[in-house]
Length: 344
Image 1 (tube, rainbow, N blue to C red):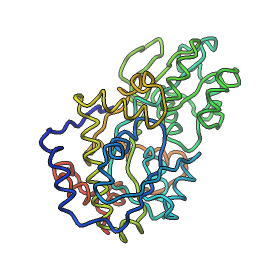
Image 2 (image 1 turned 180 degrees about the vertical axis):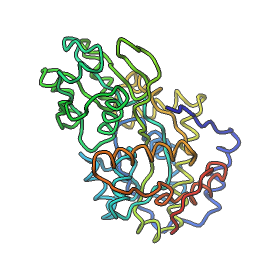
Image 3 (image 1 turned 120 degrees about the horizontal axis):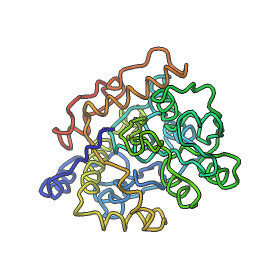
Image 4 (image 1 turned 90 degrees about the vertical axis):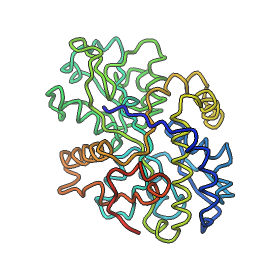
């Protein structure tokens, strides 16, 4: 996987508050952000904790969490939240199914964070051994696409893999009880599974752990975190949309700067109430990059390809057809190398 990390100049970050103040105020003061515990929410957390969103005019901020992507997507379209930051598979499915959702930004590359963790006593050393075990994953999530790509890369018959549909907490419990022998999940669940002490990372989204090619680059994930909103919100609130993306781009640049690492890890740990050592251990699995570029399109098309292969789509739209890049371009024109085609 491409591991391009976007680092901003200090001067550009320093100018951001003046840019936001110069813009018209947002049409709304209450802002709902769909939230989770993993580090992909670092830009949101920094923007909240440092007061950037408040200074931009969003004086009341809520951060509801959801037990599934489907529920979060429904909340977005219903106007219960205004920004959703999921992995890229669910929004692609929605956009291709006529759901009025639009991509406003690309947050971070998270392929490395998706990991296949296996019990040591399952004795899995080669790809074909996966046929013998039960693999827990959340069906319909990016993990489904990663398993598909892994099977394709190692010439496995995906239909013969024993997949058990369960959310991440149940995967961890199932791995502990041996009801499943492997889980395919994102952070922090993969890290917590490795902490059991009787498990091994068999494959990440970017590298193999199989005996024959252990440690070799082997990309099987096209997962990235993206910013999504409803078409209705964007059309009704052009100022809020533009200002929100300006603040988030500023947050992405800030968290990507190594000089801010210690502060950012402290803020993420405090906001998510997770142990700081855990946050630090998994931080390197994420590459914050707000650029609309070839990498963005390639990852989105890879996910679309999975949906076609699994029979969920027949003729997918081009990713740029449901991408609205104007707000990011307003924040930093250099970030939009491939403009989105959706217009408000």
